[in-house]
Image (tube, rainbow, N blue to C red; front, side, top):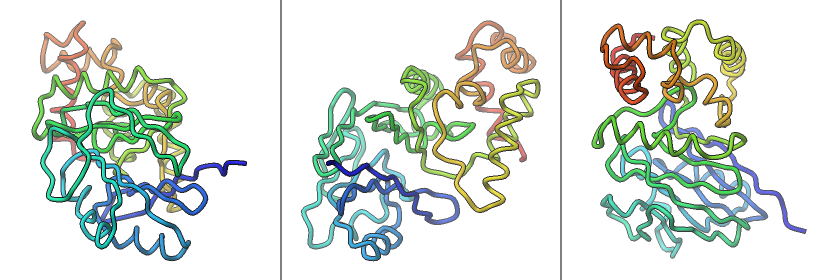
Length: 259
């Protein structure tokens, strides 16, 4: 009988999540910006690290990799269009990563926008999307373009609704406050704010969410809807009837929003 895989959130820095995938005594870690919480959990639970998945090159996602690799031959999978100081297998769109210790196969998706070479990993109705899609929001545009980020999010939105979304930061409440400012008539959004506020008050993660929930509450996945196009068209008339322009306007609005 195969043990069920568990996915554990490890807190790092102020608001990062490092996701640890565990089955039997084997583990794979996603975006270990800090090695210490990973090492502590592995030692405490007598786990063996068997792989590392990297979504993009920012330090809060890769800062712990070299420490985790010391004296080992752990495979690291990282975006082929980005540069890293540690040995790794470059991966990109359409490739599949076999993780036999976890009885799991991940499909690699290119999702540029936040960075030029950002990737996501999808398998078993789970999505590790780094800083591309957040609970109630999306990442900033740093090296890519707004258009790239829009189409990357559309790609993720085409995955099954039941997909569990594991993003890399606990930004949900701040994102939902912005969402309510531009989509105040959305009853599902109001329900989510109440629910996630209760979780946060208890010190619990608001993640994972699901793609179904994101598509009903996340303004950056709802740019095709008239209420959000109306809001965006007050700043850019071309947003009316154009989801991509609406997205770019909302992304700029979020950059200066005071939550």
